[in-house]
Image 1 (cartoon, rainbow, N blue to C red):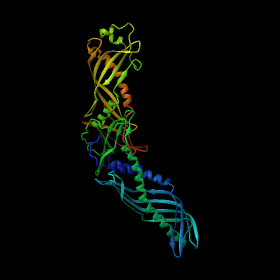
Image 2: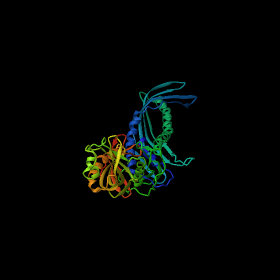
Image 3: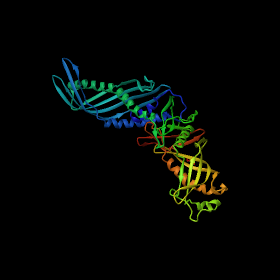
Image 4: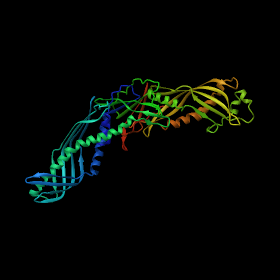
Length: 481
């Protein structure tokens, strides 16, 4: 009907045969289709009243000659769709039915025969218009899913034409020959317009098969794995894998099965699995995103120098009176591990922190190396069509891995090292998380503050939706951190 309506219809039609476990599941409910219908009908009315229709020029046979007609400056002044329905056909497709539609048209007309000619302005009222269309998704010759209009039928009942200033025999004669091209145009153009609309919308969804760029380090693959149509909703499985930028080698993980909670009271549900987040961590680990250098120039809250450690480590206390700047290099020792439990999204990060003294000639001298195990929680939100996060530090554990300045008790340094990580590393990580992961473009739907639920092995959120700037009731967001 219009883009939002056709888009949601198309989502119910796209289907592939792959059965791999997904990283992301999407559920579109009947409520979403009803919303699409409601908004789509209103937009269609406005668009039809603004539309510039092509002239109808031709002729009809009459006795010994032809009746030539020219219908121009066609403008819809009113349109009504009192009964429109969209129904899901399980494991098949979608049926669109428009009943008892009516429209009023103003137009210029001109009729010419070998005996006489005339013209003027007229008003046409067409009522009892019925359109029934069924969509299906056969496989094409190379095994890809194609969208087809399997059946479409249009009928129109009554056509009432009023010719301004005309009456009598000529009035009835003109109306008789004007009705035919109007009926023919309505019957022959309705179904092709539906078909061309679906074909245009199909191009939007081809983007699901193209990796989406997150940043310079990673991309997301949201291509479709499978789709099933049920009577109350449509379930889609999206691949949901994050790759290192330009490298589409499969990650060293296997996606496990999971399911969207059995609910239908919202319009749209999205469920991200542990697998999605774990492939994200793998990609950023591969790209070195967890390797961080902290130096004097980058510290915002603390002037890190050998003087800070001298009171705890005797060997460092022997350094010259003028303290040396200190540099810290954090290197991830293994891929961070994500864990999703009921109302809990945690991340285990293990790093090696090597501490250096920066000497006057700009060379560095390794002082000691510490193993760091960080347990963190992540709170999620959706902003500007992106899944964003905020990291909260739950606990830190330190152990001395190597020392070039003699033995010392690492527990004496825990407060200093914890403060540095809290003030320098966590804010930097949150700045990156706030940029977010782009969500899949599903029929131009915009989520507004969804309700987020964390369960074992998955994160689900659902919402009313917004399209083209039209916003419905906002959902509730629960902070997780």
